[in-house]
Every structure is written in structure tokens, then in C-alpha cells.
Length: 271
Image: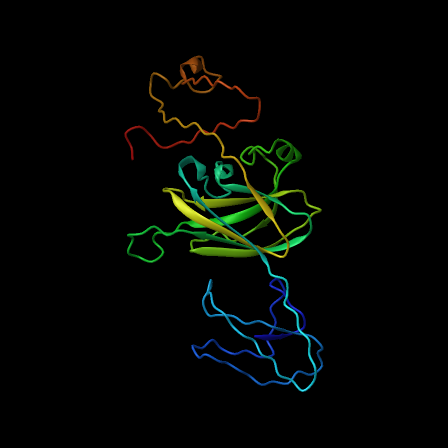
């Protein structure tokens, strides 16, 4: 591809001056005239991602020309899993903060292409049947989060969503985001819904400047399944039998914020 002007990986895509379709031939060439522009960008590419190989680029012209290679992009690749209680579902779920999170550090404004892939489960015949809806959110945590470096996204009621991808049932999602130094450290939250099983993911970030990612420690979770019946259903605190309701002592050794979630699963004896 040949584009007019100086471009990088984050420039807005424009119609190329010249485009040579991929081929299996050993050599490809094209002749074209360049008028009215002093700078052009040549982008060699292969038809498949992650292709490895050597190439030689020749440019012949009537007048002297100089060239330089654009700076290489910075690349991060992280693998992980949504597992058991660490899979919090979509942002509409009260357990959203249990999802994997990464604190992002940068020293300058940085354009980034964020790509998230999920690992399909094997053994399912229909295409797409093994995929769950998933997405990524970039959020700005509160100041106390930065000071303690503790996971508290589950507990924050007011969060500023800086950017988010689509939330879709597909193998890969991708979106462009600028990490602005005026916005304090940001967190990438990877969410999967529904989370009925362990699912692997790959998070890749292509950025114009170096980024540092810190995995945020997982939320400590305690889960208990119970049921109301005639003997332990005392109603609200306005009722005289309120004392009959189930009670669970909670031993806390560290001062902090905690959230208790009660989910109604159905009636006893009914599916």
C-alpha cells in the first residue's frame, strides 16, 4: 500500500494512492505517478497476521529520494482466564468488578489498539456455540484505589468509564483508545457474560509509546448457597419473627470496603 502523507499505525485510514493485492509470487511491482505531495508512506503487508519472513523493498524514481523507517510500535501480549468466582459477567451484573483487571501506567499520551480474544472450547460442533459475549472497559479509578493498589472496582458506585469496546459474541474484539496523562492511571477490565465455565483470554495492546500493565490482585470471595423455609423465614425487620432469618458471622481481619450480594435463585422444589 502507498498512502499520501506521513502515516503511522494510528492514522485515519485514507484511500491509498496505489494498492498491490497479496499474491504468492516472489516479486510484486507497480508504477505510479506522485504529484502535489512531498511525503508518502509505503506499507508492505502479508495476507495473514503474525506472518514471519524477510523482504527487500526497492524504490526507483527519476529524482533523488530519501526514506526512513517509522518507529516500531510497542507490543504487549498477556494471557489469562476467566475462572469460577473471578468471572463477574457484564457491567450490568453486580459482580462485574470480579473480572480480571490491569492497571495501566504511561509517562506520555499514548495511542493504543486494544485487542481481546477468547479461547474457543473444543468439541462443540456448531460454529460460535462455544463463544460467550465479552468485552473490555477502560475506567478511571478513585484516588484511594491508586494509593492502596487494592482491587476496589467492585465497590465503587461512581466510576468514570473512559472507553469501552463492543460487547459481543465473537472470537475477537478490538478498539482504539488514547491513554491521556491528564487522566490519572486507568484500569482495563475484561468482562465475560455469561460465565458458565472457565474461558481463556489473550489481551494484546499495540501502542505508540511504552505502556506498563500491573495485574490487580483478585477479589477475595466467599460464596454460600442457602434456602428460606418455614422455620427460618422471618420477613423484614418490622416483623416480630425477624430473628428467625439466617445469620452468618463475618470475621474481618483487615479494615476496608466490603460488598454483600444476595441473589434470588428460585423457590424450593421448583426448577
